[in-house]
Length: 292
Image (tube, one colour):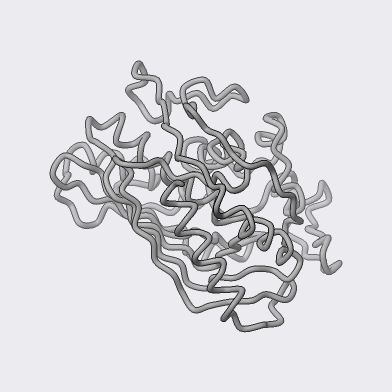
């Protein structure tokens, strides 16, 4: 059994047993106040085996944000990824929420996008001397590895007026110590069934990729979550995963193309040819609706 399967299912059981039923903005959730995980990425690559996690989709979404710094839904759609479609601003500049029918005008300049969130903030929300936060982080990891300010933050409210959805994972900090790259991730809203398994795998891959191109080893990933919840529509699916607990499988290995020397050179096509899992076995997919 992988360490991640065990950590994840323990937290799911805690929510099922002790979560507070709450009527939230987009539905009823069962929630607990916070959770913190530490992953030793040198020892294990974290991806669930009690259900299938779409590895390519997860990594491409991460590259869409941090490598491409894109907000275009067509970029994802060309790669067969439709999980963001319900957040797309229409050609008339209006976002229509499919869950509650609410409408908001953003402007035609944002048509076909999610507005000024995620990748847009990465590219435009930097510090003096670095408009681009990702460029700044990579530069500091290489040239100033003892810097305690290697931080990417997407929680920047001035951008939110033209954003469909403020970022859920909103901050990443990198620490270089003893030849290893350590990552500290902050997530404000944590959908345990759909979002969190994706996010854990994504940020593990981000750590591996940045360590790979900066001559470091992957270190620890500290993952801090605030509002940790399960939607009422996902309760049955979570019970199904809990019933699979005793059949969980070992973790796979992550392979990265050793020829890639630059984060921006990792293949981000549908094939994702520079990033592969070796030995990933799982107990099958479990479907659930995406909440907006």
